[in-house]
Length: 398
Image 1 (cartoon, rainbow, N blue to C red):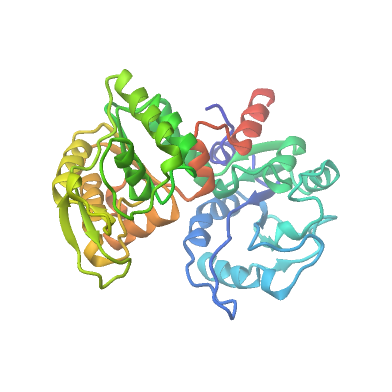
Image 2 (cartoon, helix red, strand yellow; image 1 turned 30 degrees about the horizontal axis):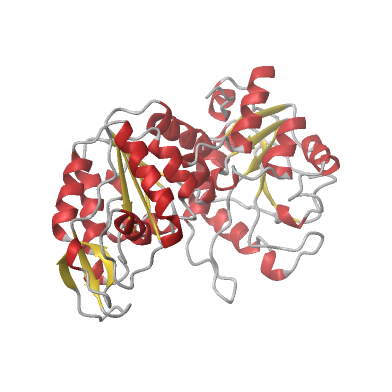
């Protein structure tokens, strides 16, 4: 993917004395008092900001936070807690600037945080009049927010159309490189794990991957639907019977390419959905009418682990069982450990997937952990993300 990279501009001295506008993803979780409860996204934004400051730029950073109403800034929508945490991480003052669309006072070597960009009227609908004002604020626009790359908004797309220079920050560039390595030029065999409660929410992803991957591992409620499609009993487990034909089509598409969708041969069941429910391992063919399938069984886990350990590339989206309950976490743990031990290049994304990675402490063994939820899913669907599209367009005309 041909894009301009901010790191290259800095290395060439092109950012010195320039006004740099960074669109970061600082949309962090907060408790009822506004205290930040998890700051991964803020920490992930620091390298780009430091890069700009070290290059001698006058730095403006903005992000959305929550779901504010355009034209109205409430205390709950304010980036004030983010500015405070960013100042701690950077070791310098980070003034918070409100009402910034018509002009920002910032000098080379300084950084300011611009209030919640989604408060600006026209941001979400990417109105040209707003985008043009944003572009006048800067000499270099840097998109470093992969989590919003699937949205064509004022600060993710419109400003990139009109800014003098538009490029990708280090975080976004790393996402592009990892996605390209995993999906565009993968080392084979390419294995994908797609899990979740419903086939319907990930049907387009499954269809897209069925044309590309060598092994398509399904888990969670999705696996139940595929088991039903294969003629296996699933008791009262979560499934979507109206999508059996779609599931069969995915299985047949894989089979036609000499690939497969491994169907569980054993499962872990319970009578109720509860952390303390007694767990029973059963052959897939022996699931009773009142059973709930809450995890893959040990035999299935061993088979899938072996497939992952021999893979060349692994894409992981979703745990294969109810891993939050210890009795039903062993399948997801086996998958996680197999990915960690594999020599494959692995890329993982999605909130539950990241929670599983953290639970089993394998962050250092995963090749790349994606910071974007919806954006990551749209990439797996084969869609071109608006942020990628506009940066490529601007690179061609640079």
